[in-house]
Image 1: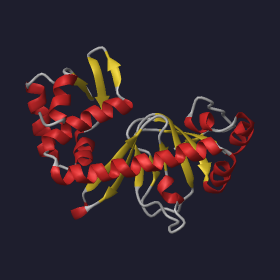
Image 2: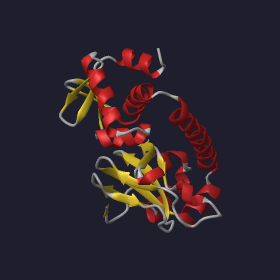
Image 3: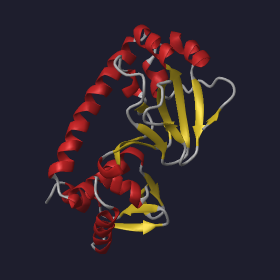
Length: 230
């Protein structure tokens, strides 16, 4: 990860928007803008907690090892998402998960001491941060239930739609997502071979198509029906 020299006030980002303007000079002074490339490790499981990261652009996967050494992607973080907040706990001083860049992008970093101070001064940030925690807890519980009870085909269709909603783009070929088949398999909690088989089935039915490294969503309503199990 490259650390930009100088101070950059990214006033459109989550952190600036939720802090009072009077606090912006403090953000300029204490926050850092970090550029990262695809494959860059933001932080690793067991690493000492340094602070909180706010995604400005790009996509990052939050992941951990689970049974038999397999990787499970817990979530994908895109613009306005937060990374490293699991290290905010008073019971642990290390990150319980890892974060790795899926694409190149930009982060805004605040060390933990400054972030704690920022929370006490900016009530809107504190409230929004609390809602973020509540939403993530609910989504995590939902994900665990789906991994145990929802068929893989539904999970694959739903994952494609979720990733498109978070970090998708509109290309010449149509709405698309950029993700490796391995990462997609790790996100839905299935083997590469199983996910590949369903992607091939979706392609044969005309729901998706491949365009380089992109998966193009050719028939979103059909994917929505498949995600709902219909």
